[in-house]
Image (cartoon, rainbow, N blue to C red; front, side):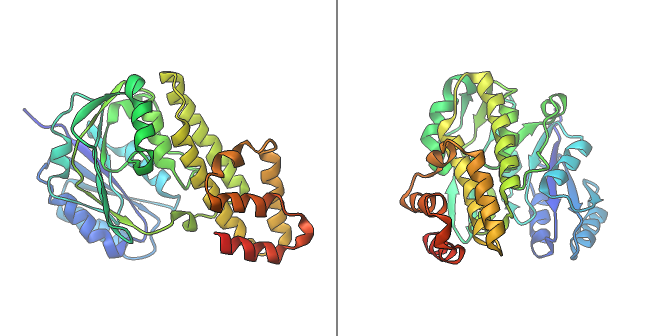
Length: 327
């Protein structure tokens, strides 16, 4: 019996320092029936050359070059060109242990296979399912997510296997206007078209952790609003299917977006830009519903006071100083 083919999609952008290890770990997999799609997203370093170099050495590798458009557009290009029955995603600064694919591909009776991962870099830890068992999405997901939201493995598409035909037939894609948490939106939409998934108690995906991600994103108010709206649509698709509201997960997503927005706000170069962003947020959240949701800690309660209760005459400079201390 021929094993099903896996399409492994790797977005590549200026990843020269880590790309050899990433690709090498994929080529060394004990499960060999895969294709590797390297999507060069407009790299300006040696990444493009490395992709072509590896493609010339192994006929399982296909390389695509495109203008820079972000990780979502790169993954979407990979999905458009994939030919495997299953799809896996790997980031170009991560790597896989040798039996990663074979252990996830042991039981294919479920349309979604969810494994764990280990992190290295600034944090070294592990997130792994507590066993190998099926989960009924309508009956079990809400309770399971509420219990695991502090160490949530559904933020990321890597460490998991997706059925390619279901993605294609239902038009599921990554939101290209999102720069943060787009993985979770993809997972929410995928889970809205299936009834169950399988947990696998393995953590052989090795993920590089680089610290507070919110510092990497320029999330002004308009970008913040786009992210919230896309995220809400994805939640609603799953919630309409199951009849449950995933409040704790939604709350954590909103805190992530709020952190990105605040970090961007603290770096507005002029008071007029700062005030424009604040006023836009106040208009958007007239009833304070969003702020009530994200003000869960002492730090964020102070942020709420400093940002939205202080009067303008206190001054932009003082406000920035106080906020930077609080943050």
